[in-house]
Length: 361
Ligand SMILES: Nc1ncnc2c1ncn2[C@@H]1O[C@H](COP(=O)(O)OP(=O)(O)O)[C@@H](O)[C@H]1O
Ligand SMILES: [Mg+2]
Image 1 (cartoon, rainbow, N blue to C red):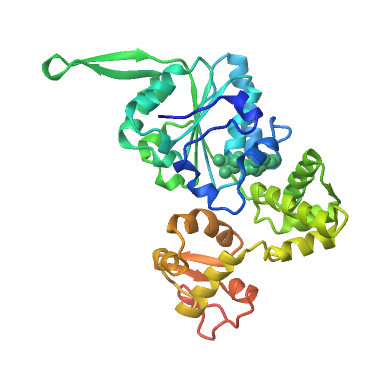
Image 2: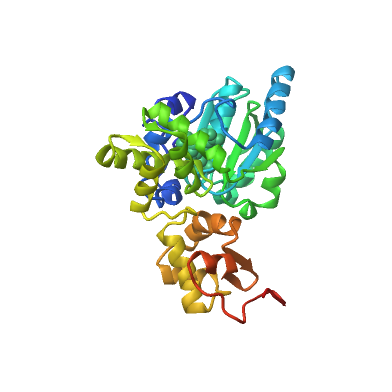
């Protein structure tokens, strides 16, 4: 059964139901708590921090759609987990004063799952499909005419008596989210009018996320405290929110409940999160490449097996930030640790270290 919910449910925590399979990725992150997350989700574009290029594109699309009284174009958001894809989808629904139904590709197993949802939509409503790169072929093919011309091709009867029926659909908007835009099929990708990659957040933006969350949760934190946590949040609001909660616990037990720079630092040290935001898995992964594979290149599967992690988790959750910060590099022959990565972990850069053809040193 496909489970979906509308935006009323987003406002009421706990009721945002999703299937178990789609939680794999997110639940791998420590302490993931969906009810908490829904509580602090921004509701409007105004409250949605950062992603300014995307927001200005969206503002125009939203206004144009309202002026034309026409549904907004299908949109695809991609980027690492926790950057605000699901949040943005519900913000858009909210700005358009329309409903959103939320589902994820693994929940759309049989044709009738997607057909049921499509038929339940009304003009202008939004269908959000998370992990859209995981749609099966049949579901994808049902979506093509639905997205392009707003109808379903249904077949009735058997063998010689088979007839195709064109069932009209409401003019809905599909918003897809994925951590892997590259894994989407070409024909599906082509049917999105707006395709946008979400960026990692700056420390300033994350400080704002943290201050906002602290206010909602009645957590006492000063600017320096927020900045300290922001700097260790891997450019990711979900992580920032999680860390501020942990720091609040720590402050309550050890420091009269107030989070300042020092308390934030102690709390995060206590969680083994270093100043660059790397956690023990990140460090283990880089150490492994340095110690066992001379800094790489080494294949993703080999790394995953050695760490006892799922390769998909490494690729989608851990690696993007390490790549963005330049601690590791991707080469055709696998991953390698960069000179910055060596330095960060306090290793000496090997004398023969080269990048590609030319020697760096
Ligand atoms: N731009 C933002 N401003 C404020 N908070 C945000 C923003 N983006 C994400 N968040 C917070 O981070 C959490 C994770 O966001 P989510 O939309 O679930 O990420 P994704 O769907 O990309 O994995 C949410 O609880 C939300 O409160
Ligand atoms: Mg999401």
